[in-house]
Amino acid sequence: MAENTVLRVAFAGTPHFAVPVLEALRHSRHQLVGVLTQPDRPKGRGRQLSASPVKLAAAPYVPVSQPEALKQPSDWAALLQWRPDLLVVVAYGLILPQAVLDLPPLGCLNVHASLLPRWRGAAPVERALLAGDTETGLTVMRMEAGLDTGPILLQERLAIRPQETSASLLERLAERSGPLLLAAVQGWVAGTLSARPQPAEGVTYARKLLKQEAQIDWRLSAAQIERQVRALRPRALAETQRIDPNNGAVERLLVHAARLGPPVTAPAAPGTVLEVSGHPEDGYLRVQCGEGTLEVLVLQRPGGAPQKAGVFAHGPRRLQSGQRLGPPQ
Picture 1 (cartoon, helix red, strand yellow):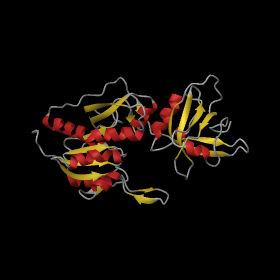
Picture 2 (cartoon, one colour):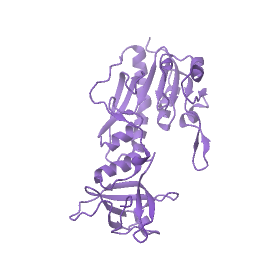
Picture 3 (spheres, helix red, strand yellow):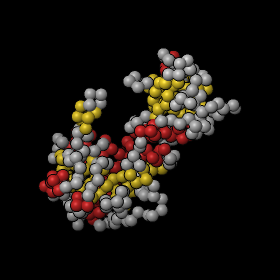
Picture 4 (spheres, one colour):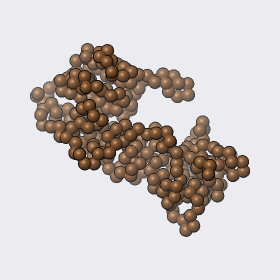
């Protein structure tokens, strides 16, 4: 095809991360003919149905279809009606069967938030942070039936900053996703880019985060726990428990932010609060870990608002040096 060919492009995506690619397509020379996104879901305390970020962004401009699954032809009837030359997929959340992959003449392109083949799967950003990776990036690949196994068209590398959270890293990746996808489409159409198979070496899987992974195990090193706090924010939050020394009552605490603390000459049992700094702005709770110490900076009781550690230290049921965090022993 000629480099300036105008394509009929359909889009499939759901979360905020997918919106920049949607917007890049909408403002490109190509014709955005329709959008697939997941059905409205209950959200918040009132459990009211809420539209996905992609639906909110797309509905004023293009037709939107929200099938519960893609298991039978009636589920992708809208896609047939739109007659796309190309389907672009970003964090859609539903498996595309072979019949859908084969539908667009130019196939389906996916934007994935890792440097494939590292971190195939549902949670590549969180897994990269948990593993202590210093680099990640974006991959545009041609989709096939396997889990993120398709051949690569284009990649862009991005350094992971020392204090990066999953929220900040996703935002930086999202900023680059639109231009990268358009460059891949242009090269794919013009024939200047060819899809190359993923290397067999370096394959890792970014499985979906489990609820129990939010629980802090103070027997781990301070570096591991600090990465856990950053990786889970904001989709989930790392959590621990405060154990009342008087009556043994257990209170759940959510940890929003933490940093590595200084070494100590006489380590205590993991989970022991070594020091409480009550400074309202720069306060912290220094906690003994299996290796090293961690300074907890922002905490939250369920149902309450996040508090800086210095404010938390002066509040009711405050923590004191010598108390323990974590499940009852």
